[in-house]
Image (cartoon, chains in turn blue, red):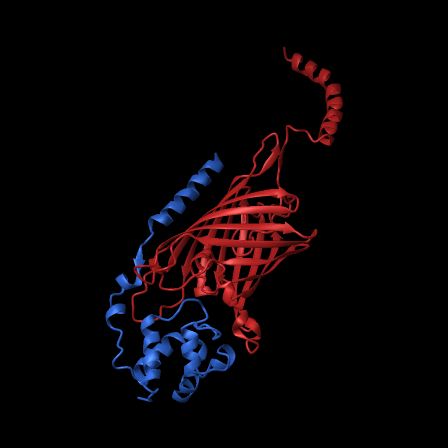
Length: 126
Length: 300
């Protein structure tokens, strides 16, 4: 009897969990993701720093780089310029570059595009 | 009238004594009326990445520490991936003969997970012949990694994913076991419209004993969803390695192309491939604690 009760209880619990299933995707849930990819007005101080800030500085800030970021700080303009080729290789998960970010997943396509555009435009400190 | 049962008892006593002898004899002859359950189909609760049909016995707590290092092809500077490590800790406890529950926390997307494994069928010979063992595994994972864009509303539901697995295994002989694991993974939030929320996969794994303490394991999950339109290029995870048993500990040392240690991650989000040497070295260490001291541990 006890066994049946526990079994039914667990099944019910499992089912309630599945009832709360959602079929969401980021494009539909956050429409701003599609519309606001600004590729014309890409600047270091606004666009690039915010991409780096959202994705990289938990390991690659000046304070954390030596311990968690393989000694590659990405806070200063000069450091980013020096590392630009490796940044692009890593975020695009190309060949022998160490894929980034490390905790799984890839950057949003928009952020990768913006990094690409900034590099192609000559990596200005604007 | 009252004396009658007593009288019967008296008559029975000698026959009991003889009967006991008979019982001992029968035990020696391995009575076919008993059910002989197959034990130790696998050495631990994981084949390598995925779950095996094995569970903890009631009152036993399994503390697991798992690591997956970086990619081997990341070069000598990164010590072939060993500079970077992903960790997964878990505690799994056997509540009943047929129920095990577990909790865990992993580096991959900073995920917490809770799981339950139910035994449905146990492979047996003798009085009841059952050719396979069947367990049902179910787990919920909560991703706590902050989103790329901190300004968006990060819904709680978006961070959940679910796994349902039927684990079907057969110990073919003393040294060889196989398992088939049809798997369903549901992700509440995916990146684009073309990415499926539901993933269907079938896993196959096996174990071959090389010696008393060492066995060779391999495991492969085939993802049935078409991989053409996914926003991220994913591959089927393949893992090959060894189980090494030292009294009380089970070490699993292996190579795999997946970084994650939970089903949602290694089935649906394996971005590395063996053909480009995107291989991770990994290990699981399992230490079993017996929390019920007064009872003899039962081997399931």
